Image (cartoon, rainbow, N blue to C red; front, top):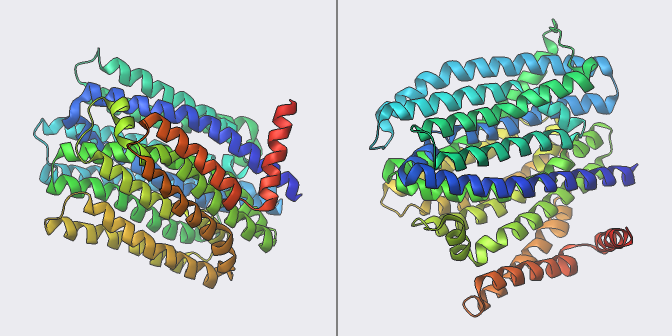
Length: 500
């Protein structure tokens, strides 16, 4: 059984990484073409206002964990009626969330734009961008239960294909903006909206065809299942608000004290981070259903092992993908953008460091969510996220450079890392030393030894430095980060591929 689940995790990871390679290239090209077509000011504006849709996507990802948790638990118990009821309840709740989002976001967003946005152009174009992005966000909310079902069923090929199509469409439209269309900002915003909504329609059609018994909607009259999901969703929603506040708050704070040009640098750095972070998140995404199902089945040891795997592998993948941006950022950004905006390199470096700290927590929320005891975990961790935004505001108000915002976030991320460990032990009686010994310590050793690469920076050309850093990291992974069993697994997989 364990061998089968390991194979499932391996296969799911391969599918996700194939998708990520394509979407990463598409994302880089989209950003390059969009920056060229829109110009620095309008691109910076979109990163502030249009960026709402990107961060609503974060909310969706977090809210998907609610649907995934309840659906995967029901699947683990093998009760079809319970699965169907759970799905129907989640549909009702997420439709309500979509309606509330629309009702609140429109007037609140308009008020903020009219009173606080720092932009020298037509304010009406800002309003148009915001309204379009909100519509896309509302549509994506409705698709959350379907996405959660696909993850619980581990049908990663489906949403991978849908997202690849959406990302390729973004590349085509962003390139065409260079040569066509008068109102480029509105067209680009509409494209982002439609490509965000497209996967939702695919998920709905696929689920209705493949899982008709599960998605056959009926209104559940009993209040108990709504209360259970809502109680869970309230705290997950608080986490979503905190996460979005941290990310979108950075853009708003920078715009408040600086200008849209600085927002362009921050927006580009966040684009890089989003691309490389998806590689790391794909590991935890492929492991997440197994953590929930193992815990629901009472296999505590297996669920803890999976958390260690999620934490270590996510960190190692993120460091590997981010390494070129750490050792040769000037060369990469020049090749990618042509002209490198001021502060882009310092922003991207600090954001990657923050992401590396955060990814140590991969798998932890899944296990705590599986237990259902999330109230105090969500309150403590996400209140710290909100406090980091407040602290960053006062740091910049005091006259600090813009990149101090990310320095503040890094300090809070370290504090949150410790708080998560305490919560993990208190809530599910987790063996923290096991996680520290098998994940954190090997990864920290790798980072310390990896810094030796910077001693040859300036001696070798940037491209060779990137190759050397990647090869060196792989050697460090194999000799230090992986256990004996993991090394044997890798060797056998390589032998199997060679024989084929």
